[in-house]
Image (cartoon, rainbow, N blue to C red; front, side, top):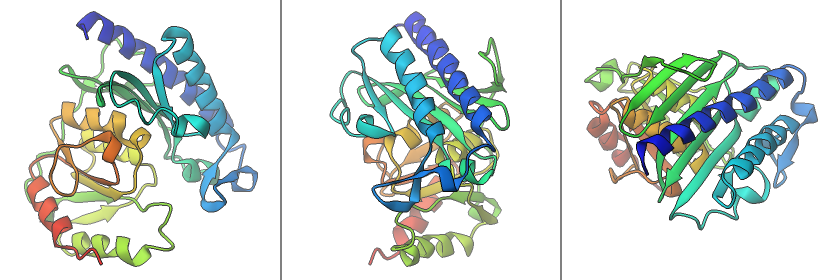
Amino acid sequence: MREKELKQRLKFLIDAALSGGDLLRRYFGKITVAQASYKKGDPINLVSVADHESQHLIVGKIRKAFPGEAILAEEGDLSRGDMAFKKGPLWVLDPLDGTVNFLHGFPCFAVSFAFCMDGRPLVGAVYAPAQNELFWAQQGSGAYLSAGKAPASGRRLKVTKAARLDNALMVTGFGYDRRERADFYLKYYRSFLRIVHDVRRTGAAAVDLAWLAAGRSDGFWEWSLSPWDVAAGLLLIEEAGGRMTHFDGTQYSIFRSEETLATNGLIHDECLNVVGSVPRG
């Protein structure tokens, strides 16, 4: 895809993410867990009117500007129907990453939005409206952070230079099946906690990846993510000089996001050793 068209798609994507974020900001603090619905009857996996309205707004913009192009989004039928579109153009959207945080009034949530070609993100953005921070990237042009507006420029992002795990701040998350698989997830948590400087959990994977790209942490691991959680973050990480793979070290695919390891690159092999040493049983 030509540079000019990529820039046009990036501008569209940023404008749409900002619009979705503005909508979320208006709802923040006004709706609660009691007003949310359960996905598939799961009381941990919540969805709210804010999720639906943000997605409706952004999907409407995509369909108007790029009719006929495939869309993969978290809510409703779009979370399934376009999974087959691994070839060609694909818009990947999480209209509200961190729904549980949002509903509890915890200000760590974001719109995560990327445009992919043949399964690889070419442009992407993560907009955190509570902090008014816009993280964005274009393949081959770097990753940037700017205040919440369509940027003419921004601060270029670089991952940290931490070269040892004992100096590393790691971030993780737990899947919606954490009640059933708590012991499984905690094996990985304990393995890292014994080695690294410390571990954090924010509850919003898209924000975690954006913050890693911005140098606010050194590494991230998580199970059971979805393409909309990671598409924009993958591009941010790579354009900021980091590395993102599966737990076996293979090249990352957003369509195989059940195992995600992202780092500044310098500690990646050590992290692979840690996750590889944990018994799966």
